[in-house]
Length: 164
Image 1 (cartoon, rainbow, N blue to C red):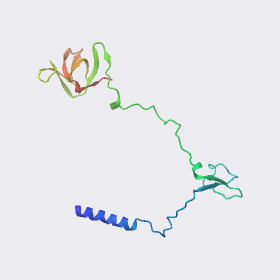
Image 2: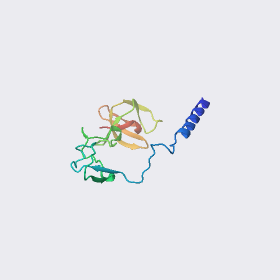
Image 3: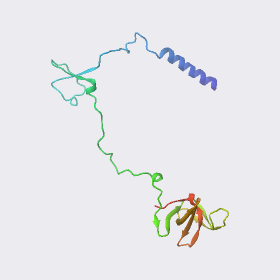
Image 4: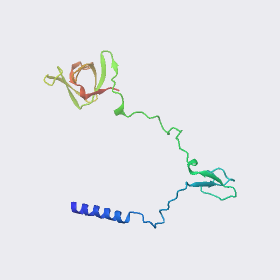
């Protein structure tokens, strides 16, 4: 496989080296030192009227090539609704409520523990999408409270996302 690849690349290199350069008598390589000039008819000064029509008249107007190029600047707004940042770039501020901030569980199932460590026993389990009230945070753990269920304990903070 390596020999075939090397042989193919070597053949392409040799072909481009031999046939890829311009020959001195080639008609495509015409060099001029003068700057290109564009002539426009005096009877039709508007270039947008007939852009492909170049006519010779008795008094042609000579315009340098640099004067015919103008920058194109978009001044119109794109059609459609106003753009908003995608969800992954939104700010991660959780809504503040009395006593803490509101967060949503992002893991499929999350153990609620009696203390901020995996050594503490699990007192309950909450599911994905449930909203919890975070009372405080300590070294990667969040002290949560769920008012309706009466759950009070600690969960790993990395499995919580701000509620929208």
